[in-house]
Picture 1 (tube, rainbow, N blue to C red):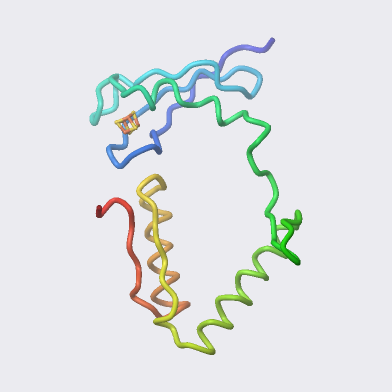
Picture 2 (picture 1 turned 30 degrees about the vertical axis):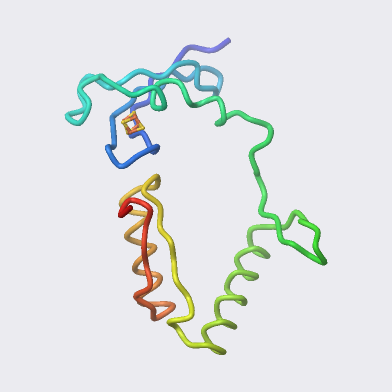
Length: 136
Ligand code: SF4
């Protein structure tokens, strides 16, 4: 077994944004503790931040995109999946207009991802129909 590495990151479970320190060994998370240097949580975490990380290594996680073809989910490449999404969104926009498309962003992703989401919607799709679960 290799040496443990300690990786600082931000918890993605909620918008509080607690600082975490991951103990990683052989590319697996072994343990998580709160980052005492993080101003938001000063070393504290809730139960999710500290213990809910087993899913990271689950074999049930999707590692490739799936596209439903004739009612069956079929594994595809990322290029094929992105093309499929682009074709569908373009088709809806061309047929029904930009306001027929909305995007639901997520509080569990980063500020940067949410920024890109709204930028994509406004500049590429041409719609202001953006919302997020952090508003509820
Ligand atoms: S540790 Fe808990 S409170 Fe902190 S960001 Fe994660 S989910 Fe939110």
